[in-house]
Amino acid sequence: MQPETVLEAYKQFSVGQACKKNPRLVHNLRTVFRQYILPTYGFNPKDLKRSNLEECLAQVPLSKLIGDATKLLNNLSSKADRSNASRSISNGTIANYRSALVRFFEWLYAQGWQSYLSSSEIGDRTPQMASGHTLASSRRGGRNLVANPYALKEEELTDTLKQHLEQLESFWTSTAVQLDRENTIDPATFRLYKFKILCILGWLKNVQGEDLKQLSLEQIIDLSQLQKFVEWGIQTRKNEYGWALNVTKAALSVSRWLFSMSKIEEKPVADLQAYLHSLNQKFQEALEEKSERIPMTFKQSVMVVEYLHQCCAPLQKSGIARSESAIMRSWQRYLIVALLTYTPLRQREIRELKLGQSLIRDRDNYRICLNTKHKTNKEFEIPRLLTEDLDVWVEQFLPKILPKDNLVFIRLGTTNKLPSLGQPLSSRDISDLVSSAIYKATSILFDEPIRTPALILRDLTFGVLEQFSEPELIAESSQSRVTKQIVNIVRPQSQSSSILNQIKAPIQDFLEILKEEVEESDEDGFEDSASQSND
Image 1: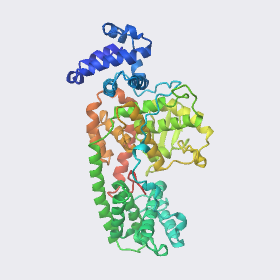
Image 2 (image 1 turned 180 degrees about the vertical axis):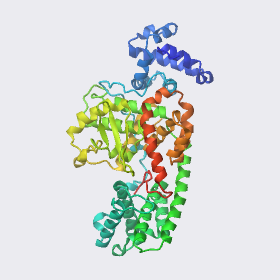
Image 3 (image 1 turned 90 degrees about the vertical axis):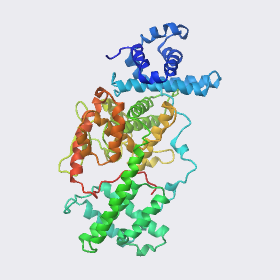
Image 4 (image 1 turned 135 degrees about the vertical axis):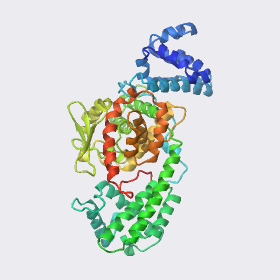
């Protein structure tokens, strides 16, 4: 039976397996209620003695506690830090109190008693936003490979290379071109492959010392040379196999173009296909290895989304007004992470969303309309818990920027790079934004910061799908082994479909898109592979 008050929920939690295994958990939770939580709701600390603690807990609605989860965790941190500063409480005790409250909230979420996915109201002040932990600082001391580019610049291209790249683009992106086994490559994917081609050419010139005037696209498809480049990229530049797959697909696109003009035999194409297959096996093995140490649960990702929502408040925690640009950054950060968490959208699809085209406002909600490789577009509604927040972003903030091409999410400029305001986000922009946001939020919400790539959020969403879809449909719709691994990890943690109903429809709709894509794709298909690269 669904409890109505905090007391009823607490009593059920206190007799659960976690508390039976660790009786101190109940003691620490009672202390947290008495010293840090109930005073927030106006109870006099003097009245919160052991004997009447439960009487006070019975007066707090459970829905209120769940809605205030982020604020309460931050209040606990602030008050505990002050106690620690006065040396009245140790660091170890603070950690125990925080752990007890986090475990209680996670247990509540797993029961599905309240739709904790519902969008809560934003307060006037932000929660704690500084923790001393940032992703940038955690990376300090390592080589900044991105600051040492090697790719050939567009202006360095010889006239012959420019002409051949233009022909290659026309061959793959023209709707008039249809090969026997593939559809055309969408422009975004071709841009990715073109950049990988420039990387190979740049490596030949800047690392291998070859003469720029002698470079040609034929060199891209030399298998032994490509293998040396991939090995260098992984060993020296610290790239991953997702990067290697995209490099090889770029080379394969060149080989098929050359073969179509009878400039090469079929063997180079077949050799590249075989190499691509071997790389794909290594890529899947690496994903499986990562899946065994997934750093964050779906429930924790929901807590991160809610925390980022609260960070959209107009005032700092101290009461000082925030700048409009800071508030806008908070809103964009929150919405991007929320869409990755609650919808099946890819990072590329989110940064390419356009008002009136791929994001359409209907009378009651927003609708996503994706251009696929099929003749008809695929559409699904976003979860309604994001409708009002998207309205705020679209109606209140975007008109002040006038983004290029009606993009929904854009670069918001920096102090020294104002010309970037309103420009499209790059793949690195959105990846860094999400990873940094999660790292900082988890450093405040949990005991330790969690380093989570943006890709994991989408995989966690597919894992949650197991709650209301047939396993066969998942197998047909997902090409990623890591997704199937996550399904098994998520399933025992999520016990009620009522929690997930709000994201059920868009995921199921999107599955049909994925299923058709899988059916039409080749083993060496040209969908770009997500990866963090140091090109």
